Amino acid sequence: MTQDRLSEKRFVSEQGLTVAPFRAVDSLADLEAAVAALGRPSVLKTRRFGYDGKGQVKILPETDLAEAYEAIGGSPAVLEGFVTFAREVSVVAARGADGSFAAFDLCENEHRDHILAFTRIPAQVSAATEAAAIEAARRIGAALGYVGVFAVEMFVVGEGAGESVVVNEIAPRVHNSGHWTSEGAQTSQFHQHVRAVCGFPLGSAARRGRVEMENLIGDAALRWRDLLAEPGAHLHLYGKREARPGRKMGHVTRVVPEQG
Amino acid sequence: MTQDRLSEKRFVSEQGLTVAPFRAVDSLADLEAAVAALGRPSVLKTRRFGYDGKGQVKILPETDLAEAYEAIGGSPAVLEGFVTFAREVSVVAARGADGSFAAFDLCENEHRDHILAFTRIPAQVSAATEAAAIEAARRIGAALGYVGVFAVEMFVVGEGAGESVVVNEIAPRVHNSGHWTSEGAQTSQFHQHVRAVCGFPLGSAARRGRVEMENLIGDAALRWRDLLAEPGAHLHLYGKREARPGRKMGHVTRVVPEQG
Image (cartoon, rainbow over all chains, first blue to last red; front, side, top):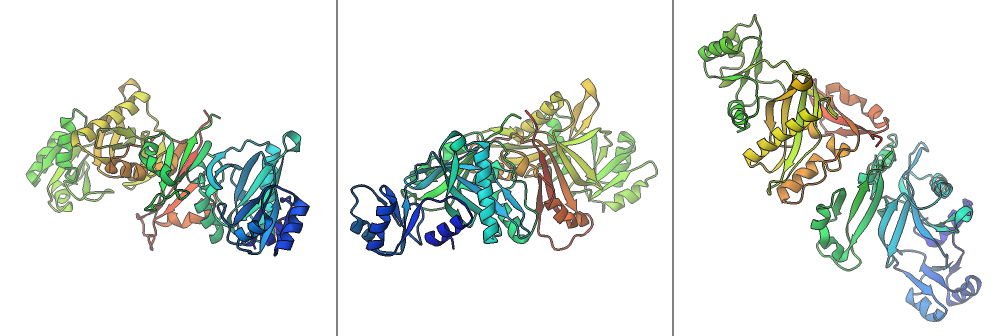
């Protein structure tokens, strides 16, 4: 279900959660009608096989719709209304076969060129917004009957008392924005996933301090020796031979203990 | 050098550090002379191949020396004077090829039946004693020209201002009393060893809280499901098929964050 953006958005909406406005697009005529309804800017995305910004094209005031439809190969698609968000966040959580649920603290994510660049914890949102985000993830996991670790990516919109979350995407797996848990939480997301799928009790998701995870993209991985020398930094390299632009080569996690 | 108890004790003494009084024993006559010099109780240990209490026999008031010498197979041996100690501790530390040195906090060890049962950190010794213990390890590592992680086991004798350490044994490797570092320190002893031998900067040895490591010996490993359910407990099982008495089957590390 989560492999298809359209069925995913319908499912999330059915859980009473907010998603960006959307329209199914199966033809150029559909696209024209959808843009008339949702306006510009908006984003045309293939229903399947999209990640890290692939399989999508932004519909700007000057965009020719026939060219945009051509750009995604005329695949079954969805048009999404543009959401003006203050922050991007994600909930990384585990659900056990017995319905037990444990969420790590809300992750704040910074993307560059459509690729996750940084995750920082705690997220700079209100306690109420964090609770609402985690409740949204809990509800999604329960409705899916999901077992294991999963992530829900969200946008934070509005501010003050009007702050709320818009669900963007479900990732039914351990997630890049949860990599910090290996050193930053009592239980890593990988270990938690094994606990969940083996039917063991879920581990503590408590955080060990203020945490920043930085993805090492392309040549950034060449800084590995400096990163090894940085106190409190934990380096992970994925063993990829070639550092191509846009390629995730590793990540580094920084943990700063919080005074109690 | 550390495979031979006699050369090890001579080496440690030459560094100006305290060891238990000892005598080389290569014959029953040697043993008789050594017991006359060091008294009873004392401990007869083979020079090589001893660990976890194997290859040693205690010389009590009633012990027949010929039988004791027979018990260790007449191997080259050493007689050690008995040390009345308040605590057993160990320093687990790393030394880099460039002479850099990083010690984890002093470990306090509790043995049962000659096998390590618990390691607790911080050790209940004075700051001066902890500093002296770490300095002893630093000096040993430097004199050996050692590169990598090693441990030095010590006894704490005396009390108050008279508290001091007696070096018992050098373990030129990662050590059971350092297993807690996987979750209890910023850098695990295993990762630290790789940093040292690869010539990378040593990682932070800072501790994450109060820590207890419990070895799971024999049937204790059958408690694994309860241990998985214990908040803040980290379970490690070694994949050994059979839980025999005295066999180290795994360990569990408990970390309790300290308030700042």
